[in-house]
Length: 299
Image (cartoon, rainbow, N blue to C red; front, side):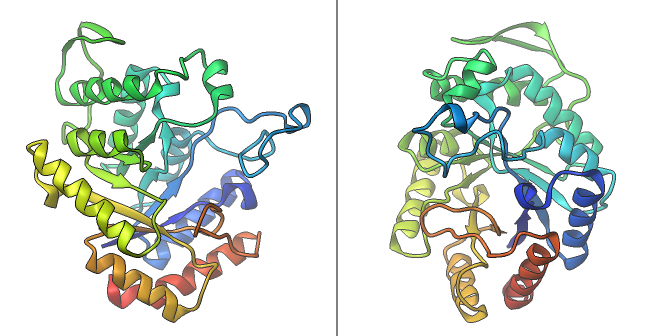
């Protein structure tokens, strides 16, 4: 199993020295990867009195993940990077393929591209993309990106894309960038089983519902003619809740269930996920230090 941490940009800020020091500290602790979320636009909540304030606004800081990881690739030597998740459907597909390939080359293959379909129509409007066909379009986007990473020249004609004997350069040395799907909708299971290298379902606490979801993913992967054993599964853990013994029991459950990646987050709030009380970089680092020490022998 690999253990990662989510970078808490909204609390610690995005200054170069801050993100560099945080990433280097995470690497020095022995974490395997650092994960970052993605939003391009945040609404002005003052102009939207009905806005759900549990959703992000313009007050929340998000670095562009490709820029952030490109910077951190030069500040670290072995730390992996993952988006959690990139809203691929609000971006131009070929450009994302180019950015992901360039990052893969610059960080020596330490990057996983976690993708999702998004929820914020404001971002899609601002980026001149269609919010209402984003699921179907994202499925074709993955096919386009995988073709561009695998071959020097691509001919592709689909419902949303046309490439006429053209390619990107550089391409990833392995011929692909790992794609991990975030979400838990039925269509997400199907797309992950057919095209994905991994699945990132955050809706399930440790328990029977999670086991059923993992079994469903493996069954659908077999039905797609692929090997379920090659499919990664990532879950998130909340060190802000419980004790070291609780963390160990949860981690052991995930290991027994075949989870391959666990991300210790300190800010995410949704369902069974809770943030820590602290806001400083020192408090976030202290918490993930405690978490790794508690589960290290289980890795």
